[in-house]
Structure formats: C-alpha cells, structure tokens
Image (cartoon, rainbow, N blue to C red; front, side, top):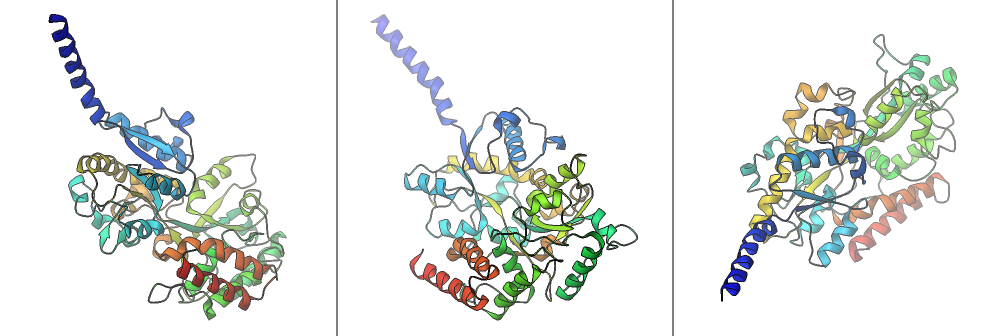
Length: 436
C-alpha cells in the first residue's frame, strides 16, 4: 500500500513539473532570409552594428536578443525557402500552422479572405504597438477589409546606385560632390552620351535577361500617371502607358546609356567599375557598402537614391515583408498572447531591421537622428514618398513571371511591343478567370 501511494505521489509530482513546461512550448517562428544560426546563433548584442551584414544576420540576432531577454516565452525559428508561401500552404493544409510567419504583404488578402489569419488590430495597443505610428504604405500592406492582419516589417523596393568616382570623371557631380541626376528621358539620354564620351562605359547598365523588368516597367507606368489595375482591381496591362514603358526599356539599350546586349550580372558590373550606375534593391545598400570598403574591389565611393525619373513624375516599385499570425480567426488566446509578446519586441527593434537597407515602418524612427545617421539613409530618404505599393490582388502573385517573360520577348524582338502586351493582358485575364 505504501509503495502504491509513493508511486502515485511521484507520478503526480512529475505531472506538476512537466505541465508548466508543456504549457511553455516555444513559439514557432517561420521565416525566409536564409539560414545563419551557425554563424550568428550566439550573438545577442543589438548595439554592435558590425554584425549586421544582411537580412539573415539581423533577423537572427534580433531573435537571439529576444530569447535572452524573455527566457520564459522562448521562440524557435524554422527557416523556409523564399518566398515562404509554399511551406506555409503545406502547413495550413495539414492543420499544423506555425505561430508566426514572414510573408510579403501583397499575399495577405489571399489568406485573410479565407479566414486563415488572426486579426490583431484591436489588441496591438495593449502590447505597446502603435498602429498610428506605421507609415501609410506599411499600414495599408497589412490591412484587409478594414482590419489589420499583421505587423509590417519594412518597406522595400528599387533604388539607384551611382559610382561617384566615375560620375565625377564625367563632370556629373556638383561642387559638393553630389551627383547631378537627370530628369526625363531626353536628359538621361544626353547624360549617357556625356558619360560614355568621358569614360567609355555605359551610364546605366541594364540586365541581359528579364528578371526585374516587371518592376521597372511598373514604375515607368506610374511615372506617366498610369496604373496596372482598374477601379475594380482588375489588371490593365495593355495600355498606352504600358507600351511607352516597354519602348523606353528597349531604347535604353543604345550602346551609351546601356550596352546593346546588357549584362548578365549588373550588380557585379557595378562593383567592378564597369558601369556608372545600377538599379538594385534596398536590400543591397549594406552589400555595396562592404564592397566599397574592400580595397580589392574597384568600387570605392557610391551614392544611392530612389529609382530614376524618366517620365513626368517620380515613382518606384515597392513591396513589404510582414509578420502574420496564421492561426485563423478563432485562434487560442493564450497562443496569440505569447506570439504578440515576441512581435511587440520585434516591432520595437524595427530600427535594427532598417540596417538591412529596407525602409523602416515606424514614422517616429524615420524622423529620428538614429535613422538618418545610418550611412546613405539621407541619400534615399525620397524613396518612401516615391514608392508605389504593388496592388494587393490575387492576380499580382503572377505579375513578375508573366511580365518578365513578355517584356523579354519584346526586348529580344521575338514579339512586337503591342503583341507582348496583348499576350500579357490575355494571360492575366485567364489568371483572374481561372486562378492560374
């Protein structure tokens, strides 16, 4: 009898010990940005910017710092492939949703419309997250039908990188060494000839393939006051503005503004001093900073600003990363609470994330000396005002694949501009009608 009583008391004690541990199962955080735990897994210092070498290192260090400060509510990271939705869809289909996922904001309506995301607008204030401090673009990206379904991580998009040494050689900087940036295609075309005469290099090397053309094309459409969606949110691709944008892309390959065949790696050409400028994303600011600091690499001095204005008004393509809670509309409140504790910390550290080069989402940080003191940030402060968000429609998920293919066909001469845009319009119409 005593032995039985002892065993029952031992089992009861074990259950009392195990139950709290089970209740504190780590919050599962799924993200892309790469795997770098081996290199950065032990770093928790959010003040040492020398460790901020890119998206992976920064998101890893932010998560490490949280786990160190809040050991009673730990977070486990699961790294997925970019852009993350394939793994998320698989988990949702299996009824095994992670607590948090990083998702591009354009995809939020696809999930929120099916009740797969947890609305958080009514509770964020209780966690110290001020939605009124979000920039308008950032807040719009995480909203759907008047409700907030995520916490924006950044606003990212295309920037324009300038080799200052080469521009100075071409007498295209002012007395303070700031580049004199043309406006409108005629000015750009003349600048290309001036630059080529002085350096023997193209002013603005263009890609030799279709990757990224869709984003440039979109920017050029909006620079003309056009749009890629109508009032009902349906795609409008085959337009006069669309044709003018493709024709300008083709005209850029004129041998002086850009080489006639383009480059298979425009980023490498820029680092090697083989072109005067280069279009790339917010995510490469720190990369080129590191390149410029390397004495073995020709690039030594660069300037970065928003995407060039070739038509009547400035505009550049943009997107966003966001944290979402894919636990559905009737999620367990305790699970959501533990998740939001982590996300409140990550939002508080949005300034750390801005070291990626992406634009922060909290206006108070954008207005602070802490932001403007980061190298190059003053140079592309115009980005947030000129950034055009991608339409948040289902058909936009096919935008880059379709437009890159059709624009490439026009650039290579396989199709006329009119036929390429007509084919693109037809493919988008089919996507809207049939979902593929």
